[in-house]
Length: 163
Length: 233
Image 1: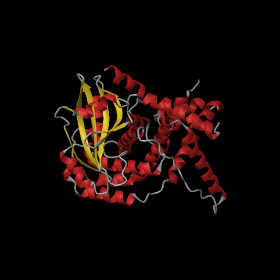
Image 2: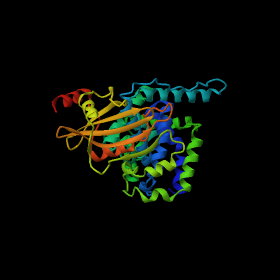
Image 3: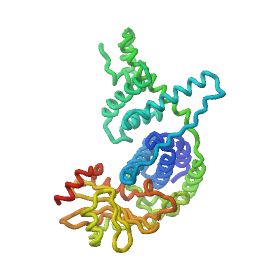
Image 4: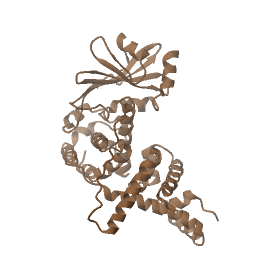
């Protein structure tokens, strides 16, 4: 594994954590997913094609790891959802408060959406993958990405009251 | 001219080439209804993008960064394996590299066998458990090991296969066996050493990924389909 790959991987740790969190919705599980992703990415670094972006390649590893986990957890019982984010609304200008409320509302709406919709929104609108890259991560055709994404966007807009 | 939602969304997402973007923008210039639809796409994107502001570094990042840098310093070990371009599913054919590397990992793959050397028949006790137990149920074998069936699959070739694990103390083995001509044939088995408090949920079981990818096994069977397969074959 070369150093440039390592540094790129380090730079993307926050993105990986964010994506893992969006999949797992639990901090401890997201932590495990990031760790597994890093281990597998290091071992697989030779199969990464440097002419393509690293994000989709990594996200695919994370996603496979997540599918592993869920497959095994089906038989191990459900653990409690602890999506705890400390509220810190005090001591803030009103604009910051408003921004934070918007953020909370967006997070809340994402959690209410079906997982399939939340996932595609995350990949494209949060992580800013292209449609083609998202298709690669999800293993579906680009046309399916577009139809699923547009349904998800409109569902989110409805929840957020964007008319 | 009516512009559909997906085209407006592609415009909002910067997925249209310059000419197409100009054409669509011109077409909706005098169309407040289409502009409102476009806004739903641009605003949802902006709202979601704002979520990145929430991202914080986690405590465990330091350990991971150390782990990555250490791997960068030992560059040649990994380069002899995994030459199958664009196929990350197969990259764990380097158990020794994983071992040397697994300083911070919660679980260490200490070896796996029988991949590529053909399936082997299973002992009678495991055989009986796989014939009978629904996924999620466990049985204690004669030698004290506990066998839990994790899931059932149907491969692209039509074989009925079951993923299971056996545990004794901290020794954990994950394996897959398929029923062929009425007998269970083990496809692979992977030993994992469970560390204290470790739940083998997100462990390194890439051998399983490999198997799933190679055999074209899809999603696990539902319990109903599994019951049918168990009773009819």
